[in-house]
Image 1: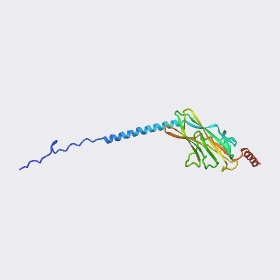
Image 2 (image 1 turned 90 degrees about the horizontal axis):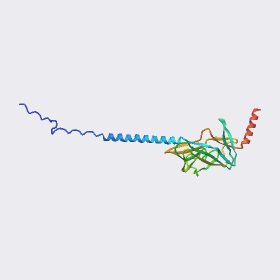
Image 3 (image 1 turned 180 degrees about the horizontal axis):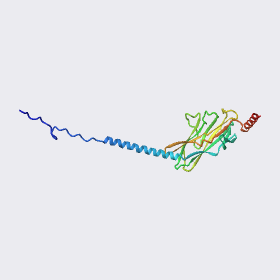
Image 4 (image 1 turned 180 degrees about the vertical axis):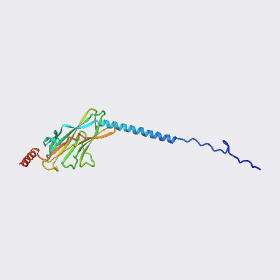
Length: 238
């Protein structure tokens, strides 16, 4: 006798497994949204940074027509060692002298910029020439306390000073010399000491005058040293 066939589950029957719910993609969609927002934010930041860089690209720092003026010491014009037609100021280091070093911040850009700091490189408290920068006008009354203050003198421009687009602003550093230069008699040293930090649209840039310009300081009496030099040259020719 053939037994009854085994019971088989039929589609839709009581024993059928429920269909799996559709897989949700909410997590993936959220991930794509976050990524898109990050890309947009990054692009916006890059565009803003480019605008800031563009705004600061038109800023120049130039020396005044008479950049170095001294009381108690003579200021001469000396030829650039690499270009004799280009004259640069040179002050004789005389104890007790006081000098003013004057520059112009020229905003040739399309947006207002703010001057935050003025730096005098090589004129910090430990410089070998014995120079001291007391203050910067306007709005730079005291040197910043920085790790490199031994070498450079930095001055915060209190409150920041706005230079409108197409305008310029003069800055004057008050320098004094009380003696003690570590330089041989009739020796000289020249360099480009000024750097100005400017800001616009969240960007910041340190701007310096053209590299070929220098401010010189001379140890001794220039006329006497020139006479000694001429006499030495004559003796060497004999």
